[in-house]
Image 1 (cartoon, one colour):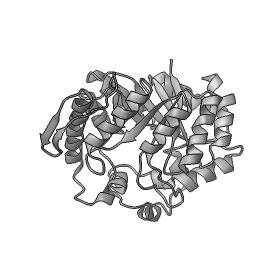
Image 2 (spheres, rainbow, N blue to C red):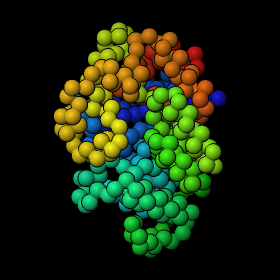
Image 3 (cartoon, rainbow, N blue to C red):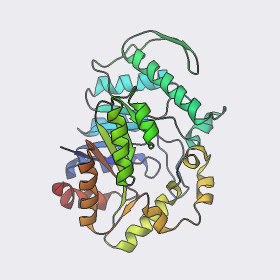
Image 4 (tube, rainbow, N blue to C red):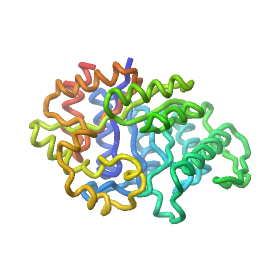
Length: 317
C-alpha cells in the first residue's frame, strides 16, 4: 500500500511555520514527511532557506512521522559531516530517518567557492561520498585521497541500524546508476511514461528498497487562486537540466523565468481547484508502483492545504 506524506519546502516557508505545518499534517492523516536542504531559494519571492538539519531534529521530536531529506554531499558539505548528522538522527530516532543523496545544484553549492565540476565529475564525487558515508556508519575508520579527501575519520555515535541512503534522480540514466548503490529511489512528478521508465530502469538494474515520488501541486478554493499560487511561487522551478543545475542565484532564476506562463508551470505542477483531479493524479502515480508519495503544495500557506487534503483527499487514497 502506498504511503502518503508531506514535503516541507525550506526555501519557501520559515522553519517555525514549517514545523507547525508538519505537526498539523500528522494530525490530519499524513503518514510521513520529507524536506529540502537548500542554502538559497529558487526565487526571491520564495524568500527563505532554513538549515534543514537543525529543523529535522525539532521535527522528529515534535511528531511521530518518518522524515527524509534530500542532500548533496561533496561540495558544500563534506560527507564525513553528513555521516555524523545521519548517525546522530538515526541514533535518536531509530527507523524514522532517511537521506536521499544527489549531485547538487550550483545555486546552493557556489557559496563555499571552488570550481563547479561537470556533471560526470559530480556523479563520481557523489559515488565516493556515498562510500565514505556508508563506511563511517558501519563503524570503520576512513581515509581517502580522491575526489573526496578524508583523514582517519571515525563516527563515535552511530545508530544500531544504518538509516537508508536513497538515490535522488530525475533522469532514467541516473535512476539506473542509482541502482548500483542506493537503498531506494526518489524522483519528482513528470509525465507517466517517463516515471514508468524511471521505475523500470531502477528495478531492472537490480535497484532495491522503496521508490518514492515528490509531487508538486497547487490547490486553492478557486482555479484562479491555484494558478496564481503556482505561478508566483514555482515559475522559477520549471527549467530542466542543465539550467536548474548550473544557475547560480535566486536573482538569476527570477530573470530567466520572467516570461514563464501558467501553462508552462502546469508542466511541472499539478494545478487545480478540483480535488477529484488531485485524487485521480495521485491514484495514477500509485498505480505506477510508487511506494511513497510526498505531496508538495507549492504555496507558502500550508494550513488550508493540510486541512483540506487531510479531510477530503487522503481518505480517498
